[in-house]
Length: 320
Image (tube, rainbow, N blue to C red; front, side, top):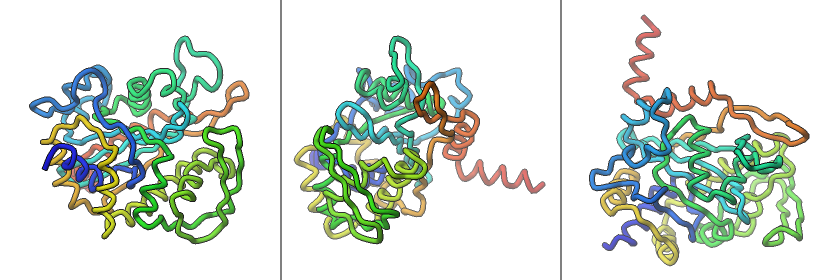
């Protein structure tokens, strides 16, 4: 099996489980920086030193871990509508997905204006590298090994291929923006239904009616991912693989692709946990932001990275 076909298997059986839930067809998955993320020894931390802060409180935890972390970005006209970090623990068969709100406050020198201080603006001016750095900073230096940039226009084909995604729509969603690129028309009635490709794109892009604002949208995306995941593994998988082969490009090593595919094929969806970057909304000079809570983010990172053995040891100490 050649590298491209092997990667297709990896993508559709494992990486798709890394939150994209079979959404992208045309995306870029590859290196962050000028060097391949995995060298001959496939050392995760070796090539990420320029992003990971060695003086940070979690560097030791990161450096000992065998987790593979993948940054998933939903691109919409130069802005990242969706920012997620999928962390897969191959040894303990755990998948943890962290959503980073698009309005997360991330001030940058030489960039003025309220919109430029949001993390979703980094991609348009600094690309994937800048966004990876911003997400790593927000998540206290967490290493990022790969990235995937998704165009929402690609969601439709994959969702239709897996037969749609069952969702319980909490309220009727209606919105029109003729000036968006492409023009945006959303109309989804309230209630339980199976979203086809077009409706799925509308659902994922809708963000104006949630009581919690963008945070409500993030939670809705997570629900969509979990539902799509259940639909993805089925008789249509070979056809999805064939569809995905048309556009997939990657520089992941064959060895690592094989390793992850072999491991992830046995991943139980019960071991998939979704998180929202801890924090809260705040208005600054009339602009709304999501301010990450450093202390609570640290607690989340520890919860994700601590092994079952470490957690068991802590539990025993608490009972003594």
